[in-house]
Image 1 (tube, rainbow, N blue to C red):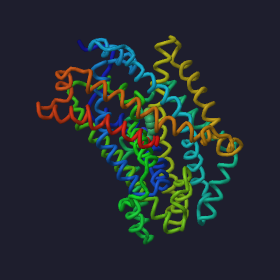
Image 2 (tube, helix red, strand yellow):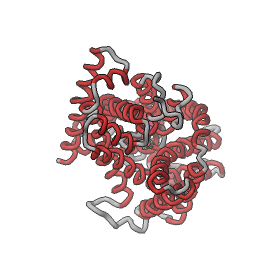
Image 3 (cartoon, rainbow, N blue to C red):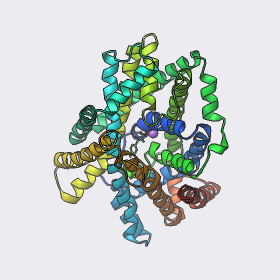
Length: 447
Ligand code: PFF
Ligand code: NA
């Protein structure tokens, strides 16, 4: 019954690397730290961790399960499975909204990937060495205010993504991820060590883990849940697509645990690296999307060997961003190839250019279009908010509800390899805890 045309990951390790390559990216370092700072610290962090465990883990497993059972792209897998279980083919919407989310996210993701590229070059030419807090803030502000610079780097990043996807060489990157991931962790540990030496590590630790629950409100909870989806690449059909390449022998639960621990550890390390620098230099934790771009150059600009370390760090960050961006474009391209029978290169270029255009609108919202807002949000924030707080959780909810309520118990048993008690525990979490959690967060966030 195995479809020969549909290749499988050669081993569990390859699969973990591919999934981690998609998961670990700007979300862990850029987005996580700026949201923690914006939302007042520990309360956000703890809700985020709860969302990862109670919602993220089951949704990740559910998406892989749909992919492995369906053996097709997200939309067709949903159609097939729904049909086999006597359900409406309208479940395909779950796959389709995922592809839409991927498309929208990539547009602004590429803008930030461009910042990371720019800062890689800045490290090489020593732009940051010896800068003080005002200096790095000015450099960052200068970049934001200059549409040409932003356009240049956004285009460079997008060109890299298009080039790699068009040539279909994404598999080669996964083996590179094998050495990049540990290198990124080591650099983060060096930065954490730098923070400890600065004498402000305790403050950062308290900021991240000693909750002031009065900082908590519906908006913060919704942001934390959105981040859980974003960082694990959930609600985009990506993990579904990956699941379709997954061999029957791979254990979904333990694999999900590995990927989640890695992703979460990198985010927490990033926070522990960044907040000591914030407090040591009297910067504002609520700086917003520029947080890592004003804190890290300050550290690299003033530590021994900082030029080389800064170069390595931003290079690794760019690489992590690239592997995630590729995983975002890949399903869009695949769908276009299948639906329109366009050749791969054409499909990649057409979708890449469309994403690039949307990214241009996003980058202009930092300068010339700063005052153009819809429901109080500029284009960049609108893209980010609509995807992470609405599209991703809704798609993820669809995936978990489908798996929990529509698949047969035997299928679930076979997929998870659990005992009868294990399946019952899974059922409680997948049928009630996770979906009710998502809905409750939605309601809280909207009020
Ligand atoms: N998970 C990636 C990150 O944390 O940077 C971002 C991302 C990649 C989101 C792929 C969504 C996705 F489909
Ligand atoms: Na992530």
